[in-house]
Amino acid sequence: MNTQITRAMILAAGLGTRMRPLTLTRPKPLIEVAGQSLLAHNLSLLRKANIKTAIVNAHYFADQIRDFVAKIDQPQIILSDETESLLDSGGGIKKALPHLGRDSFFVLNADSFWIDGPRSNLTRLAEAWKPDLMDGLLLMASGHQVTGYEGLGDFIMDADGRLTRRPERHVAPFVYAGVGLIKPSLFDNTPDGPFSLNLLFNRAIATGRLFGLRLDGEWLHVGTPESILAAEDRIAKSMS
Image (cartoon, rainbow, N blue to C red; front, side, top):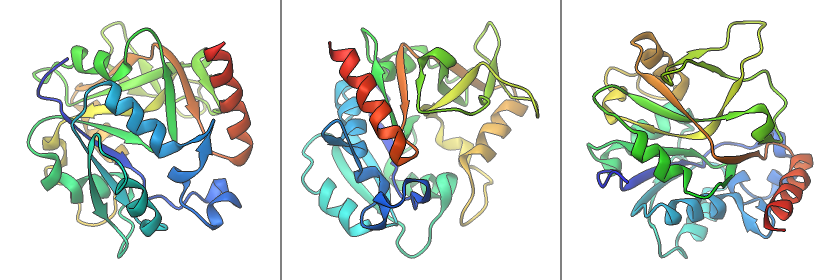
């Protein structure tokens, strides 16, 4: 694994509106799947890949996120407080950049996770990372590797792994599995306040510097209360 990649950002500040009524009393990252919260599943994946520091942002029920991460020993957790203003994915990461440092880092969506194959997918991403060629490297799942997702896909990936967006009214073979490696320099000349990480993905696509790596395992998208049962069933099958 690339020894420079020691930090990760977990995006945990969203409102979780599609997960209501479960999110009326708690933030979505603390919804439990198979006996562990979504946030705990993500932290477990980071530990497996020997990530030393994780920055976790919080806005909705931020006190519950704060209490949860205070009990975590590994990785070291730094809370990025967004209680005053929800900054969206890109703005949230930009606010946390002083904690993330100058080296490339992982970014994870707290509302999904994955079942690894024989090796950690985070380790595979780090090994495939070529900062001279790439500004971003995203984990890609194909249709048969996905539980809880019914969309049209996100990206087309060429033979070299270079990504382009799904054309409108078309179906794309790959969906973004909610985790990637990105450079902090992608945030140069970005807006103050809220903006989406998609702005940076599109910039990297325009310069031919956004790449994908196919997931080895299965991606679990937990977007609604109904999707919890499907994810738990898939986890149970993977352990049998």
